Image 1 (tube, rainbow, N blue to C red):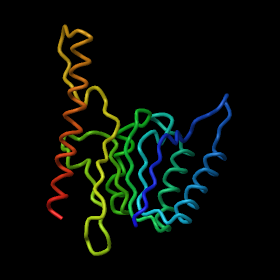
Image 2 (image 1 turned 135 degrees about the vertical axis):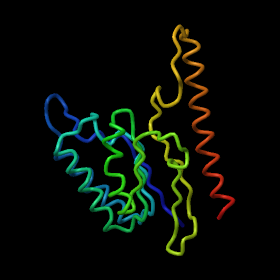
Image 3 (image 1 turned 90 degrees about the horizontal axis):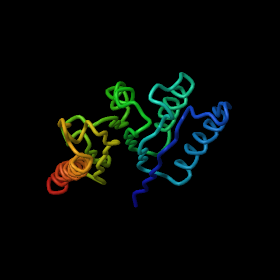
Image 4 (image 1 turned 135 degrees about the horizontal axis):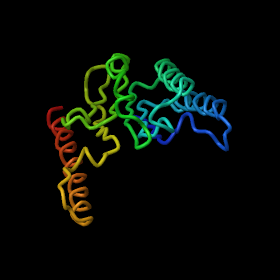
Length: 181
């Protein structure tokens, strides 16, 4: 049986009343590694807001990349990370090639190609075990066009239709893997 751990909103780098919380985050990430190992988690999904700001500090980046390096030494075979509204899409996507080589899928932003948001988790024989729609936080500019003179109602309707369209497109891409495998 496959085990999936879904987490989000880590907000690495967040302070509380001007107090840095790096030690708390270190303890959390240590706990997460231990939990993944103890529970024999196969897939880790991190659904946005990895960082508290779009320009995370060096220490927060060290925590994030250190965690990703350490998770490769656990039983977890698939890591999928999507960007949230606090994350910088370009910052998350920048090391995508390197992280991809380590088996870590990162989708920081919408690319315009729905297939980029579909991840097929495969077993050691290449068989599909799970199909994951890795949709990042959808920014207004990603899903609708702006027209001069639009009413608030028209903007809201275009936004809703854009969200529906985007999820439908990603879902349609994912379905192709269901019938292919």
